[in-house]
Amino acid sequence: MENTIDLLQIKIEKARTELSGESRQAIDAIDWKNVIIGMRAEKGYSFTQIEDLELETELLLCGLLNPEDYPKELEKRMGIPKPQVNELVNEMNMRVFSKIREELIKNIERKKVSENKQTEELKKPENNLESREELLKKIENPNLLTEKELPAPSTPSILSQKLSGAFSVPKVETDHSLNNMTKSSEEEKTTLPKIDPYREPME
Image 1: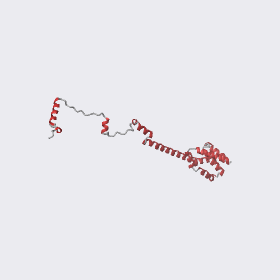
Image 2: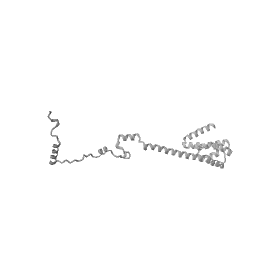
Image 3: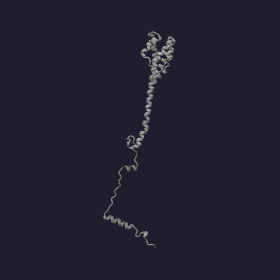
């Protein structure tokens, strides 16, 4: 008999490990074994009946027993009439299963919230920092910069203004008429010294 219980316990432990983390946490959060032990005094069950109730409940929680078969198994194992089984199942639903379900919902909600936070955190660096590969691409090929990535136009410097546009020298018109040429030569004559100071005869 002990070998059978040991094999069943191994099967239960294996089934427990296959449950989702949220389900395990929800089951562990509710002290359902103490609820069952308390029923011995309340309902007058024997130790054997309490052990059977505990085992069948654990099989149900681990997914090794179909919920539809739970009342039948209790009736058979505990040796109690169907109306009493129905009352016991309702009490177990109220005091154990509904609380485990509530805990499971909370755990799933918590997981969703933490996953959402993680995805937001993962997205943030992508907005603020570029990946190394993207940065290298932009350094190697500056023409790949998109309009959004181009720096905002500041007031252009004089040098950049001159280099960006076509360079043109202002036009100066020179009068090449005879009058103009004679005038300037006469003016030069008046302004030029009569004797070159470097060619003056030495005294």
